Image 1: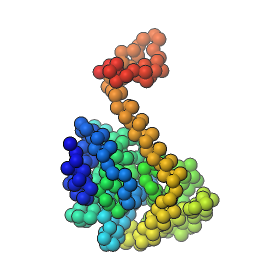
Image 2: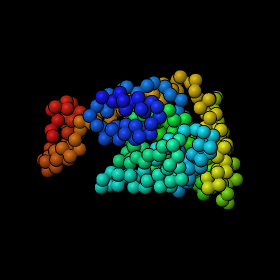
Image 3: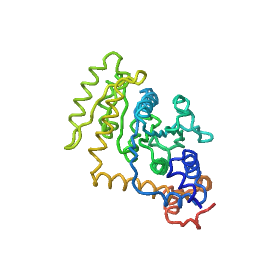
Image 4: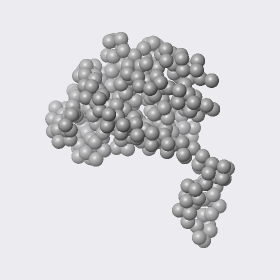
Length: 309
């Protein structure tokens, strides 16, 4: 059914890629067969761009696109936006902020709604990233919504995680140890022309040095996204991290197992109807022996055919 679509996807056809993403996002009939037919491997470098709101992530991605396309590279961007609480659509739409690249045939930009996902990502981000890989892009940048430390989920999706911060984050550096500090493969200190930037970079490098491993010490790169300052250094760090981890089978297996776990978890939850669950809780709420855990146990045991609709 999807052979022709897959063939066009393999040729790098962006219309086919957009169509495939829509089929997966909407869980159209047979979409799992499409995913199971995807080729293995691919050379796409997947980088997660995360960090607190206002750090300039979209502007930084825009500068990366400009630099990479100037080198003849094909670049895809998945910008995960906060969702409307009413229709679960994306609220921001990063394609507007990256409009200068809209007509570039070597650039594919797609906004996806987080749809209430707690990790700053979209529930279908794993599948979509694999579709982009099949389309033969050189780089895929996944920009998260910027919700803070809950964004550690990006580390299970991207090959390299870039945490974007600004000099004013100096007071938060201790908090970062517990969250973003743990997942950062690269730090980009954006808006580095601001006061106290040098002191902040110095302290961050000291902190990164304490977290170094045998094969990698997290670089701290000063950037000014609006002028493209530091962008070549950031691209070099992305390439260096890929080379350092490319042959690490243990890390690759760990990431793939994490992806598999998330996909299995989602598939098993597909048959749980939240509206039916709400109705059952409402019906039993006033019962003198109401117990939430018994309801949970029932849902955990039921098969798809047995669950109330």
